[in-house]
Image (cartoon, rainbow, N blue to C red; front, top):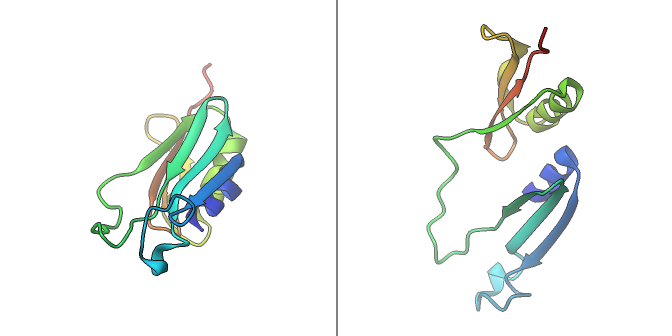
Length: 122
């Protein structure tokens, strides 16, 4: 579900395989958990993820943020809006003291994101 959400945000080609497909668990409740998910974004970028099986301790993501930076204002604003949909915006996209446009949000899966849109050089 999370990787499908990220595909809706970033686009790309998503491939997922379950624990059952890899014969990686004898626990029937883990059969449909994702053993390997790969979202190929093109241009050499790949986002990968996996579910946590019961034999490993699950810990929610805390203490870090992922950052998207660049100069394509339209694209980065679109990413920010999609990532924050169903989540929370802690700092709306706005002009920062360093001159760039910057914002922070947490997506609906609890992942914190920072988006920095580089100011046009004069």
